[in-house]
Image (tube, rainbow, N blue to C red; front, side, top):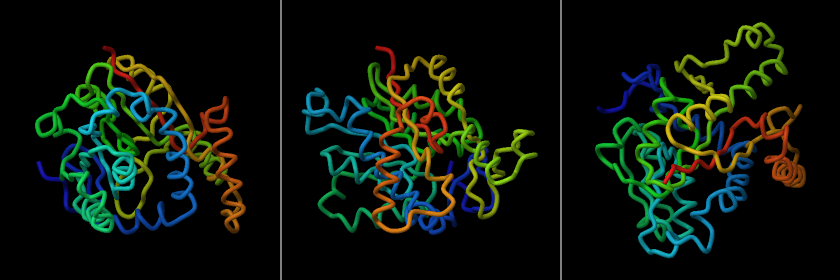
Length: 278
């Protein structure tokens, strides 16, 4: 099944793709301080949270070490893994996003040969790229699915026994807190937090709670090994960081508290390392 070409509609699976919105997505996230902060935190956290990235990991010693990047979007994460010696299979259902990713790869020819791109949604990976995979990355994807619980099950089925899944999801509890801060009290009280997946809005259609990830992980034979919060302070600032010095100080604060109770629980995103039972 091909993804929907109309950015104003959900796919036939009830998912939200970004055809027609890739430029807006790029501007509103990665060309803004919050995008820089997100990438900086992932750069710091992933080597510590993923055993596959540690120097003594057996799978890292093989030249064929491969990561499956599910919903790889604009390609930043694929390039990050390629820089660290991995072969990367990047999958993305939005043709617009995939075009942006391919352009980013073309600008880094020394890394592009390590990355292969596939115009595939998560639901179709079991046929096209069944694995099993020792390392899967799925960042900011489940919250755009009509059925994220099923999405996590499909990721588990693609994962090899003992394999690692780096999962990042949009945090429903943080979204509620943000709505209260903005004065949307009734919306928060009635728990009307989901986006509709229509038009230009980028509010996820399925924001998730830590409790859901805990329950679904157990249900699908996955164990939570690590968890961190991404953007635990940034979204509540009265104004964005003013200058390089303030941004560096904010990033330092985020790194300091992103894995501490209770702060990580209010990260705009929750980052997990999940391991499949052997």
